[in-house]
Length: 454
Image (cartoon, rainbow, N blue to C red; front, side, top):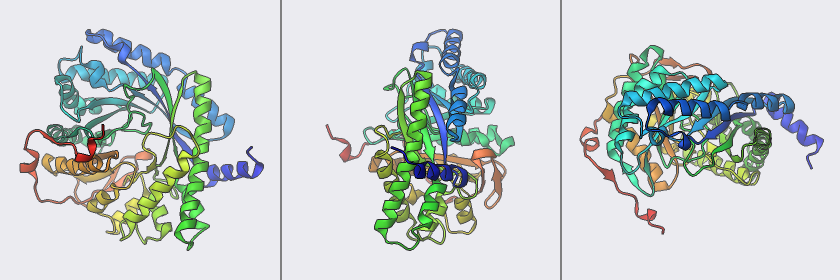
C-alpha cells in the first residue's frame, strides 16, 4: 500500500526537485512496410507511424493531468531505416526521402523527436548501410525531428574501423551543413558500441528487430531528487550514502512504472522497459555533476570523480531493478556536457577535460555526450575519439556512445547555444596530435577474448 507520506514525498520530488518522466517512447516496427518501390515504402511508413502513434501525445497529456506527473517528451523510435530501406533505396538521396517521411509523420502525431534513422554495422557494411550513413548529413540538415545513430562495434563482433573512419567524415559534414545553427545537426547523431534495442532516449533510440510490433518504453530522470536526498546525509559513511541513492532510485523508478503501465493500458500496446537514467537538464538543480559535488568533489573532474560516478551509477541500477521487473535501455547516469549546468561549470573552471570525460565513460551509462569541439578538427581525430570510446564499450561489455559537435567557425572557449533540453556548451580543446595513419588502416578490430562465451 502507498501511504499519504509517500504521496506527499513524491509530490515534493515533482514540485521542488525536478522529478519528471523524461520521455514516453513508442517503438514501432517498420518491417512490414518494406517494399521495393520507394514511393510505396514511404507511403507505408507514413501510414503505419501515424496510425499506431495517433494517440501517443494525447495519452501522455492525459496521464500528466490525471497523476500530476510531468511527462516532458513524447517520442517515437522505429526499426533501423538501413534495414527497412535497402530494397528500395539505391542511393543516399533515396534514403533522404525516408527521413523526410519520418519527419512529416512525427509532426503529424506531435512528437518532438523520432529515432531510428540508423544503421547497425559492427561487423561490416552492406551497400544499403553505407548509402544510409552517407545520407545522414543531408537528412539531418533537411529535417527537424529526425534523430540518427550508427552502431559501429560490439563485444561479440569487435569494431568496424571502416565505419569508424566514415563516421568521422560524416560528423564533420553534418556540422558543415548545419553550421548556420551552430552545427546543431550533430546533436541528433550518435555513434554507438553495444547499442541496446530498447533505449527510449534520443538521439540514440531505435526499435530493435527482436522487439514486438509496437512497444511502450519509458525513461525516468531525477538527478535533482538524488541530490536533495544526499544533502540529508552529508558527511555520512559510504554505506549510508549508497543506501540513500538506492532508496531514492527505487522511488523514482516506481513513478516511471506507473506511467508506463498506464500508457500501455490506455493505448493497448505492450509495456517494454523502464530506463532509469539520471539524465540532466540545463535547469538549476537538475545536474549529475552537482550530485558528484554533493558526494564530496569540489568540481566534476577532480580526483575521485570516476570512483564517485561508478558508485552513483551502480546504486542507481540496484535501486531501479528492485522497482520494476523490466528495467532496460541504458539506466544509470548520463554525463552530457551541454545539458548539465554543473558539467559546464566544471569545464569553464578547468576541472573537466575531454580526457577525464573519457575516463568517466568507463563507469557511466553511455559515453562522450553533447560535447562541443572546434570546427577545424580533422575527421581522423574525430574518428580516433570514436575508436577510443568504442574500445571502452567493447572491452567492458557495456554501451558506449559518442555525440560530438564540431562547431564550424568557433574555437576553444567560445560558447555554443543549442536551446531547450540541449542547453549550451563551451567549446572544449581536443588533443592536436594526429592518428590518421591508424584510422586509415582498413578492416576490423577483432572481438576481445572474453566475447567467446558460447
